[in-house]
Image 1 (spheres, rainbow, N blue to C red):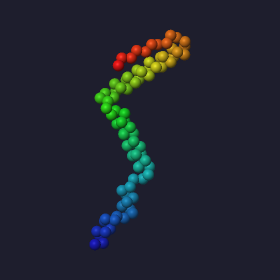
Image 2: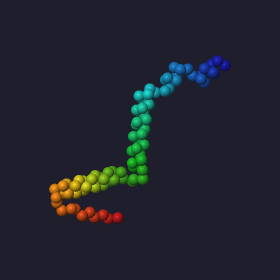
Image 3: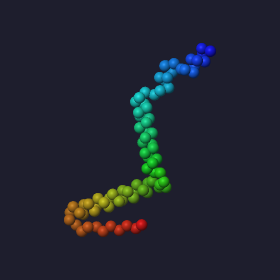
Image 4: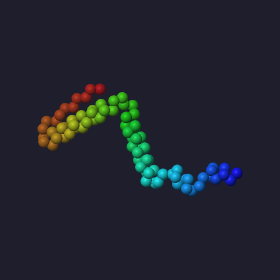
Length: 82
């Protein structure tokens, strides 16, 4: 009976082997959070690379418009197709 009880309850040395150090846990939690963030960014998107290219293209256009506004050039008309 004594063996059964000791194997169920466990000893403190066994618990310390099962629980990772706080640094290791923090690192694992950070990696899991990063993985969830990446999954949420691509949720519902068939081609995430295409979306990134479109975002870069729109940022580039916005930079050009800002540069033109600073230099006093003609404002650029924006045309959007829905």
